[in-house]
Amino acid sequence: MATIQKRGDLQWRARVRRRGYPVQTRTFTTKTKAEAWGRQVEGEMDRGVFVSRAEAESTTLAEALDRYVTEIIPHKKQAAREARRCTGLKEHLGGTSKRFISTIQGKDVVAFIKSRAAGGAGPHTIRLDLALLSHLFNVARTAWGMESLSNPVELVRGQRPKLPSGRDRRLVGDELPRLLAAALAYGGEISALITWAIETAMRRGEIAAMRWDHLDRKARVLLIPETKTGTPRRVPLSTAALGVLDSLPRRMDGRVWGMRPDSISQAFERVCKAADIEGLTFHDLRHEATSRLFEKGLGLMEVASITGHKTMQMLKRYTHLRAEDLVGRLG
Image (tube, rainbow, N blue to C red; front, side, top):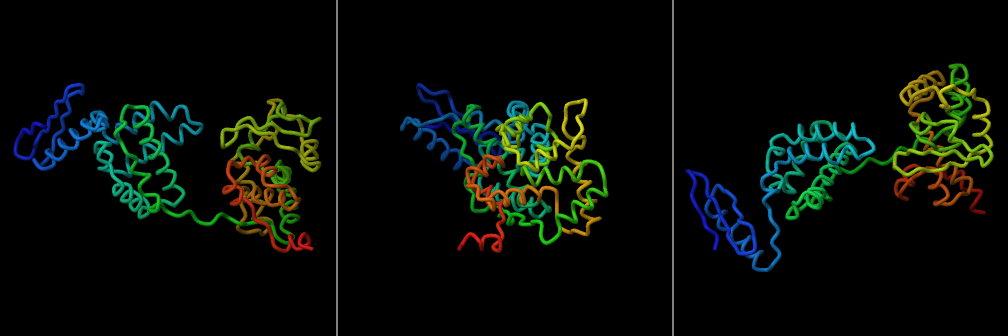
């Protein structure tokens, strides 16, 4: 039977001794809680399902986040960004981060969600925070010897903020010729970049990172060695895409484009303003390109292999077929 010892006015220490198990101790604010904990531990030992809570009950959430930054984040693709997210999590969790990780419950996660939303964080930002927090608990449970932990984030799936509907902006009417005309007047690479984005459905960062030695001109294929999803892919090139490459001068540094991702977006914004086109971003060209691939008759797997989407759900968010373009296929 667990030994309960009073320590001061508001502390009761429970101690469980059982042959074959390390001594288990924990301090509570009431004798009732100490006795309940002792009975729970002894019952688990009797059933042979006991898992030590010692580390989980002596590690704060903030300490676990610091360990996550040191041991897990360096192996992630976006390490710097994820480290900043961990720092932000500790700040937004406030006093909760100072509690032992074993005491974090679903209600604490719900409170965090409400606090972040009230502070102006968008649904996507909150969901990314929750994804990191969930992975932290899973790592602690599977790799850090805290097998007794449950993942409180998994308990509040229905409480997570809903993502807004994906953007469905496509080029309409004469916007494309107006856009290209304004891009030509603007000068530099932006006109060729617009055509390339529409022909390949590549992400802005992938385009900016292109190198000539990744091009197989004979096979009409471009290798993208590093992608957002972490999986390299080969993009087939249309005649128009090859025409764009043939019009470009060769750079001494081996890169195809001289513009960085942010510079591409800034130039595109100025071109849209000059063309009197509202509500269009450079990333919308990826939506446009993906939809055009389907309109050409390519199947789901064919389009996914070009765009690099991992799931059909994400591919659907990037696909906006126009009803008027489908009429002819109905017969």
